[in-house]
Length: 392
Image (cartoon, rainbow, N blue to C red; front, side, top):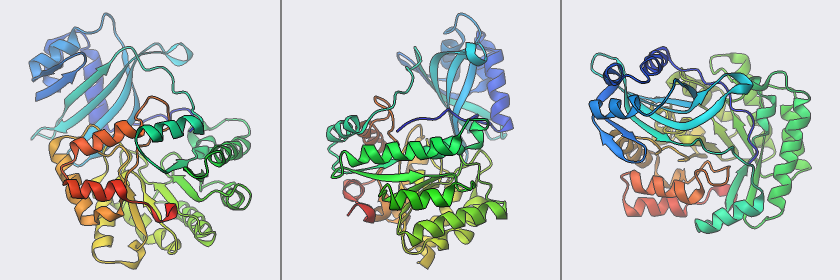
């Protein structure tokens, strides 16, 4: 519920070059036009379609230069998505001007182009932490009876926050706060603590969360923790966290995506070297093995294959759809429906990634997922009514 500083986001070279050209031509539609797809869509107060119309809107929207500051990036097959802020100034003087949501596609030549750009002005106000009373109100609005609250305490021991004073104390305080909030609504909320599995704090904190805070489960964000799936030492430490959670009968929600180079081999290494360490508890793969918006299909296929061949390691696997439909094009949404059917809708859990009042609320995110993914009413009903075993 309490947000840490946003980590720096590294963009792949092709996307980074495209963004540099996009900024260099900020007020010149003729320079912007080649950067957009032939059927590009730009949305602000109204929607325009087509390369020329898109470049005209973007090239005449701003009165002076600006930057695009990346907040989140995901690449899925032939497409990619970027959430960013239009900003001016640097460091402490930086001002957020507006919110940008861009999608990209590759032309036949292999060149990246902008497929869509959504512009919101002014920039949203800062994310304010909400307490459990407000969260329950959001659940009521979405007609949701129970919710999992995932601590983001791991952010305090993230390499992104290097130099932070007393990070372990702050991590424990955040887990304490989350546990206290959950305890105010024990019939509605279930708490998961979190740690950075690469730190010395991790295993003692998992045990404390279970024994002292009575938390139900464990959240691991391997991207924020900077876990390298090709590093055997990192995998061994993550495996130790899984073993500890399994011994304490704590289900695990794990965010695997760790950057633009993440893909099938990373998921395969996790599957083969970590997953079996927690055979007795639910392991929930967040964002369908991606980072949201969207998902990483080549990584997801590792888990799909395990489920379909009835691999014992996949017996307790579940997947959540938090933000996976956001900003996706029709072909990607059709593929998502296929993957859900291959996994089985009964293993798919609804998640909103909702942490901040007024932003992607549970009700809004269900509307996005329900309205965009081409599943049947019966399949949506299965996902809507699914309860993870740790909620039953």
